Image (cartoon, rainbow, N blue to C red):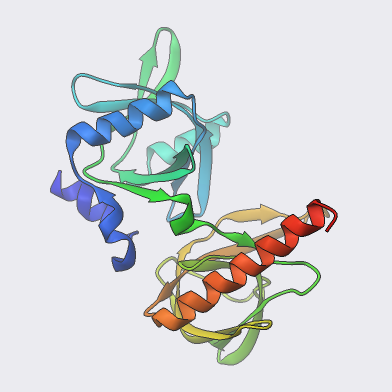
Length: 251
């Protein structure tokens, strides 16, 4: 199990370490609850650049996890040769995330399925601890990245939480990588102040606009963000959420 824990720890920042579950019995129960409620699971691989949707089928007596294959055969093939899979799901407003080593393809009653070892640890986050606010369109947020390809760059903020941001709009010549860190990034929050923090690229999902144009959105975590700036983000999220609820109520 130590190897799997190390694989998982690579994706978890120190600020979230306290939410890790290590008890094998509790981990099995968490996975069984996802199965019982038929929760959708996203499986990321290739350093977060690719993914497929799946659902867990069974926690086996031998200590393995059985899950559905994805719908695309080529994606399944690439997932099988990937050395690490990160699973993300939620149940009752609790985010569940963990990673395992390589998948194995099996035959399950005449249909293909995947098998993975049970994780050595599972991240279990309450909604209030990871809630991401979709950035307002009316007053968009910009993230100033000072050291991108040697020039100051303004990225669009797609969503924001106290733990990180999703940003997009990178020039095509920029080669982003998982683990890449941008120092002294700045995000001005209207009526609240400016957040200053380093950003670490955690995932790079490929997305497609309605126009059909492919874009890269970087999911970034704050690194060493001061506590007052986290509080600033939280106040901003609460205010925007309150304003949106008022609009829905017609107030």
